[in-house]
Length: 122
Image 1 (cartoon, rainbow, N blue to C red):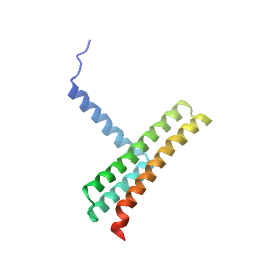
Image 2 (cartoon, rainbow, N blue to C red):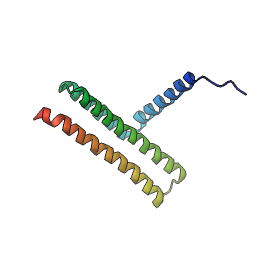
Image 3 (cartoon, rainbow, N blue to C red):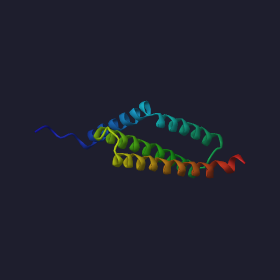
Image 4 (cartoon, rainbow, N blue to C red):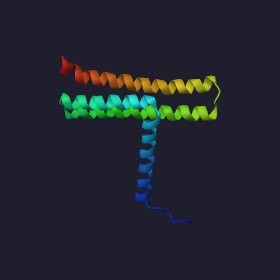
């Protein structure tokens, strides 16, 4: 029986896989590229408008939420296409629900951005 790796080694390997997955998303998915560009723009706006610590936390959570759910949406679509490459109503339902989750997160993030930045701009 092979020697079991330590807890720390397993966590490092897990972090490496996670970084690889994030890089693959950013490298291959157009929607993540757009969201990443928006995240950079919002981060720059945060520095420009000198937002508060609380506003930074909300903004970071909103960005993370949208990008994470987009990653899950991408994974769901890839699994669905692998399992059933032809059009199927149940697969279409799964994809629509996953896309709907991204939409909800994006609308929520947009509202948070409006609440943070609208008073600073006007």
